[in-house]
Image (cartoon, rainbow, N blue to C red; front, side, top):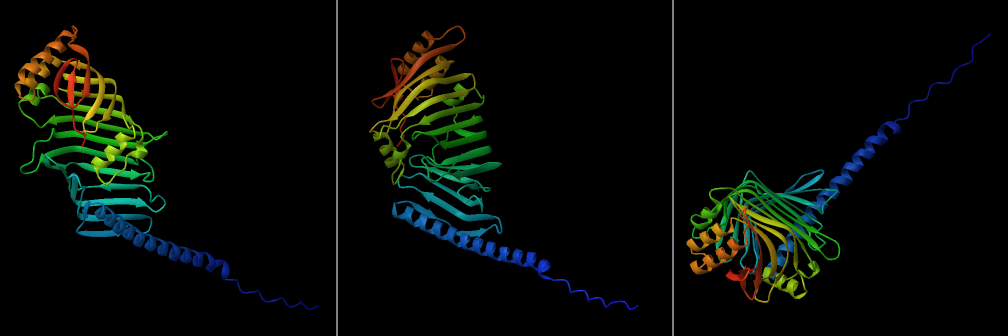
Length: 344
């Protein structure tokens, strides 16, 4: 009996082995093309945005730009970058680093590892350095956008010929801006363990203690906050009925303290604040007398305001009062203590 011939085994098909690698290579090629296209588009958008700002009267420049981060990020680094708006406010940094993930190009993170300099229109420049100086920006299609800034172990140094800045250092400086419902925006500013820059009057108030600041407010009519520069944007916002509703605010300098219980603030046609703040004052007579001794307030004004604060002060050295900004003046109760703060 003979054994039947067996069919020769077929050669294994290599398609199943090669196909995954081919698809992977194709995906890498497509993704690489998309990344490089996005890189080019990012540079073009930056150039167009800078040119639009220049046409509106801004000064925008950088010495060099590099864009990297392949394959999953976009990293944009500018050297000697600066921007100045028409009214004179400016910011500059030797090196600005920014980063966004490819899946979230509407959210950018920034860092200034070599510090930055901001310029005040009338008061000159301030050099800012810190262990951490970083920010983030998102929701750029909304008003206001989402913006966060954090500085840790920050040092402030006025530039040559510049007027002093309120702080010489701070353990932390934080600023947050958020869009909200019903055309609103939320703004928070905080300073933790700051050291006063001034000598004399401010030092007497702070008594070499820490300066802590908190400002939490809700802003209305944010869609109207628009203009070619800061003054025009604030002016348009004010004309539309925009205001700041204070949620929580306070300033502590040594033993002296001012806490805002509630209040509403507007900006008048003269660019100065208007509105009323209901405040709690601690060690107010001493602080007002220091303002008079330092020449910030006329001595007779300081004495009268101190007497008002003393009359309203309880056994715990705490007084309740109203600070009003009206007709270009700031009043504590019935006493005018100086001009209202200028917004623009």
